[in-house]
Image 1 (cartoon, helix red, strand yellow):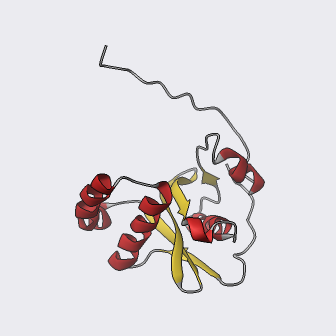
Image 2: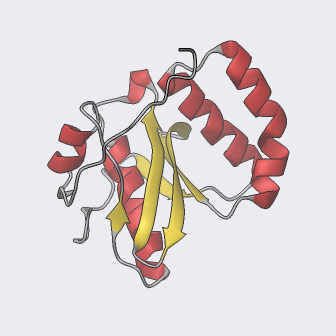
Length: 150
């Protein structure tokens, strides 16, 4: 959980909420590429984009580096703050502050909504990055899997 204001975006980065369907589609494409999503899954997800854009209660934020959308993430408003999902940066833009800028844009929306906190779940890959950005560990999540093939 992050309860303190993060620093502003670095020069050359613009971070803000996604405003149009075209930006929404581009932000999803950033996430798919950054996470290495299989082409079949991307094709299926792409067909659902208009409905997801129209019906979602979630917020989506993006970060532009020199005019190119390079980072995107989804957030769900709650009474406790914004719940963060799917923050991802394109490989060629990593290490330049885009993810920090993304979280600042999310923070600004959380404050505007009257819930100044960011909440997320980070595993072994994202946990250390989140902690370097000021997130504090407040609990543990244990994932259980039921294997129905047996």
